[in-house]
Image (cartoon, rainbow, N blue to C red; front, side, top):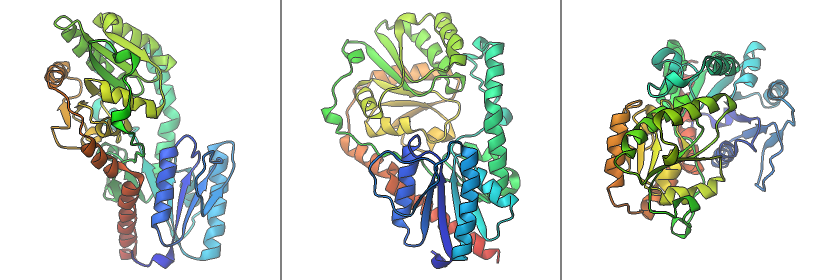
Length: 393
């Protein structure tokens, strides 16, 4: 790495308890760096973990945390007189403040995990042709209101940052043309690998039905209407077909969800349960006949990685966020997002194939997506950023 001694790496994450995987990634990055690396957090971390060079700024809000972080960065800069690489996760508010205050010799990196503008400019906001007619005006209005704050934060983050790291090529649509060359793509990490063979069958899977599984938040952009349409087309030929959805439904989306179920007449072919523990999910991945990911947008979905690690047959929409994981058609079968007929055909194909769990392959996927592996990728990105910065001077 060029001129390592002239750079200090500062990673910023407000709440490590909510974003545990990202915090683990920052710790791995710190362990791999031989040079100065500081992690700034805004809440005490409630797990036993060996911490070094961790600065805790205990704040009740992200705004106050960002202000205090900016002043801490100024102190660090005065003390070391080096170029600072600020690697901020979630909202680039601290980076925004350092830019407004005109901090010199600072490279700001924004980590973007989703796109706020992709649907607006490319696909239409939260459009699923098989479910959009059931979105009520009140729901649309609340959805719009709920996006105002994230869109404002995204504009601040995009304007403030010099470079961007995202988990999907779709995210590049949020970045203006002049900065698109400063965008890098890498996976998000996952650090759970249970003993698949020791997992017991969940109570929902004890019958002799063909079980399909969806895991994640439930709202229109996730392609739920397309999934329900495919189930509706299949239920007449196969009464044993059953779909289990695991995930949270927001209050704004409950009427839409219930109207979809009634319209497609699949009340007897669907079960919904709320979010469950991440470790427990692997039992469902192991014993389902197929895991389905019908989204119109994803970053680099962890549930898809969990299903791959568990050796689960997967059907996923053909979008960048899903394709970044694995191009081998033996692992994932892809269909065009919104095309219920294509999805139906793949469900028939994959459920008629005898399943074999490949534990060795699961280990390979785990290694590919582990914090150590992703941290190495990110450090290579930092090296490229430093090279580009050096060429400017």
